[in-house]
Length: 291
Ligand code: SAM
Image (tube, rainbow, N blue to C red; front, side, top):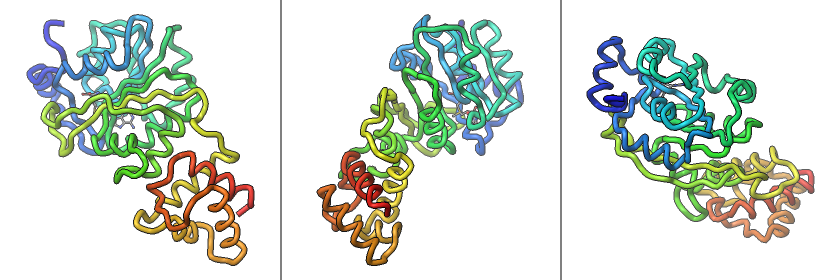
């Protein structure tokens, strides 16, 4: 193209032509820096044998880069107003399908089955920040074999998702992500490259889903319940959080004491010092005692 959609001037022209004002409630901040988009494409390893899924194409900034580099592109956009805009801005690309749908309601497996064959399927998106975590967990729980997720989000959230035990940002989300994936922050993005400018900086998170979860637990739902309960009150000890979650009866207290001992944990520890393996051992011990 003579001028990418993702340039400040072209974005300004498009917004003006369609009398569009960005909807804050839908997390609309349009990226206006082509180099960042190229960097996302490179990190995602998008090539002519790759199908790409995009969430929230907006006015098409990232979609255009995907169209140029990928085999096929399928983009989900919730805002009806953007459909005629995308039809116009992406008119020259014949490998893009835009679907007017809330990504949280999309049947990803069925939609992706409709795409042509490809060596790889990746998700590349500049996410609407108000639903970052539900989107990620929907993607991770879908049965589609995605090869990679390259997701732009609020920097602080990316830090939480990739945090290691002992750090301030470490919490139940970090454990949940580790359970499913290898995760790393690929690079950070300043707030100044968006129209309109958001109040926060952003980061690109690169996720690769593991073939099988990082640890094996007896009951997955119980494991996640335990992790959330353990972090419920961060300043409290593991013991106090467990008591709040499971109760204070003598029988329960005995089971908790024994389970902590079996897992090699000190009740005075705080959840933030536990590794995912520690949580796994504790969950299994508690589960087996039918707490
Ligand atoms: N991809 C564009 C870019 O990089 O400039 C726009 C990104 S903007 C941060 C987020 C986009 O997600 C907006 O276009 C917004 O309308 C869309 N969106 C918000 N909620 C959505 C949902 N539940 N399902 C699909 N798209 C959604």
